[in-house]
Length: 410
Image (cartoon, rainbow, N blue to C red):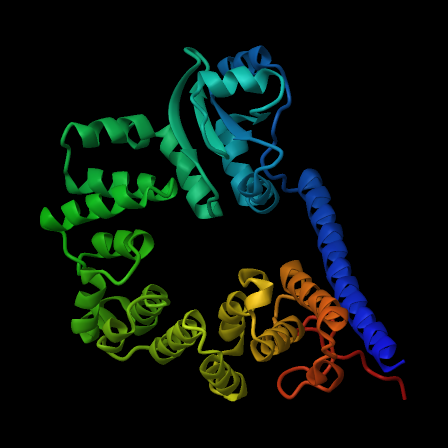
């Protein structure tokens, strides 16, 4: 009887978590539909034409525009992400609709198969810019991009000296002028060619560029990542860089690039906002990798209880550490299994973005594993699931934090 009660309780909890997740997804879909409708009526995103290739070429010739093609597949996650979060933006739509004839082509269907072969499409998404007069590719890009990157990609297609083929040819021929290298680095960064970016930036510095030069700093800050000698230079001349670019900007760069890395090297850097947090998260990750779960639990619990810790940043990092799908089920000790569920609950209750479906999915999946363990191992429901949370919100709600309680009528 007791076991049946526990099982029913877990089913109810899992159902609640899944219901909340579905409600969040539904609300997100409704909002997206409203936004798309609004954009069509007032501020459209990219207006993609779904016409035969010959008609697209004729239209582009008549309007004296390049053809922009988004080559996608129906199984490509980054393609869907771009379609939902970037292509729909009014600023992106305004730029692309004004300068290009835009086509969205499935590389695995109909004419798309031959066009993908013709233009050498090997990864998705691929952004191809075609001159309709010659039907030759003049600029290529790809991958998931921010709105800013994607507009810069389009700007590159319009400027012959920023086009991918020109930049790659000039670089191969030995052009190492400062302005050219910056343009080349920006392009290679947009297509996630990290090795090319790093090599070209090193050459920019070797050619006389300095991090104290504003244009060099800007390209460094945007494109170079990791615990590099450049980051150590910033640390050693911290006050100078803070004076030049502001403490907030410098601290943000130092914090971003020390999210992961060798703990001793990071500890040797200057003090900056976010350093202690990053070091502690690295210690936690090291403890988990070494399966020193008791140590990891002690450190995580202390951070959750610490009012001075940015809990949203902690949640962003903790949701990867606590994800049970990362572990082989039979290898997870019971205490770590329970704590991961507790952390996933804390995340699901307290993450500010209530429409992030993944946090609710992970929590529901964890509760499902609890159900599976009851008959298999004779282990009951962890006590914390049935008790009020010690930290953070006391109730599981999809209500955003910014919404104030509705006034009660007297």
